[in-house]
Amino acid sequence: MNRWISSELLAQFDDAGTSAHRLFTSPHAWVERLGCDVLISFKHDAARDEALAGLREWEVQTGFQSARVFSRFLPKQNAERVAPVLVAGDPAAPLESVVTECGIRYGIDFGAGYSAGLFIDQRANRACVRQLAPGRTLNTFAYTCSFSVVAALAGSKTLSIDLSKKSLDRGRKNFELNGLPLEGHRFLADDVLEVLPRLERRGEKFDLIILDPPTFSLGNRGRRWKVEEQMEDLLRLALELSAPGASLLVSTNCTKLNRPALERMVRFVLKTARLGGDISSEPQLPDFPDGAGAETLWLRIR
Image 1 (spheres, rainbow, N blue to C red):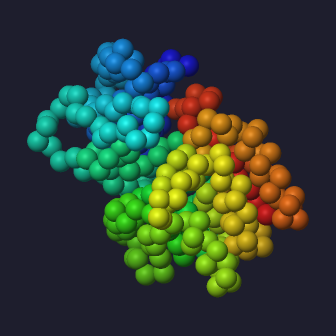
Image 2 (image 1 turned 90 degrees about the vertical axis):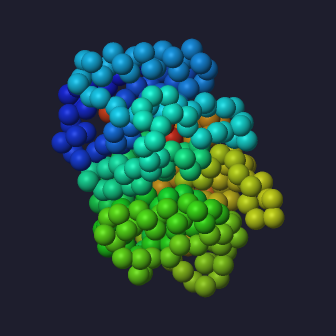
């Protein structure tokens, strides 16, 4: 699993207009390119130091030169998460930047918290959304609205829901970065599990629904969300909002929900809802080894 991407793959990313991708993966650390900057995520100091030394060797071999290097510790508890720390580079340079994925622009902010603004392991799923070109898209737990951006670029009207108003504000900026008008797109700062029943009562239906919730969070009035306990309920609510022939992306980083467990859950919920559906997944990303990144599957309602 310990490997750096080849210079050939690096060139392919550049040719495709993609400056946000994985560079290296090991059991205890991984390294991501985010534009001209690099982010090392690590579980212990030795893994960080090994990744940093490997980065310097890889840069010599490929000719890539990072402007800055950041690192962030990967804690076992979400409450211990901290923002990335500058390891090398100009400390006076702005913490905000812009990266591209297949020519699409996304804002990055190393000072905004634990996550810089784009989950690069969802690249293939974002490309799939653009190909689907849905009429109406519901993006739950939308974060900075990357799925909404690609849907909107394909002509979709979107509804992005996230508890964090700051994240949705960054989502609006991502729309603006890509020359997208905000008209026809809704951004709602609220608890997803409270909003979905309201949408169902209003009779709203969507051709695409994104379900990529956090592993753990606190909702309105301190309600606890644990994905392994509540993903089933979330999926049931989403099915009530699905238009005929709708597509749903179901994704999680929870280690308790591997691909077989996720597929069993989806099939069980489909059966109880008396619906038919086809389950598939996008091919493994070339910069992510097997087992790295989120577990995801696509459900297409028959």
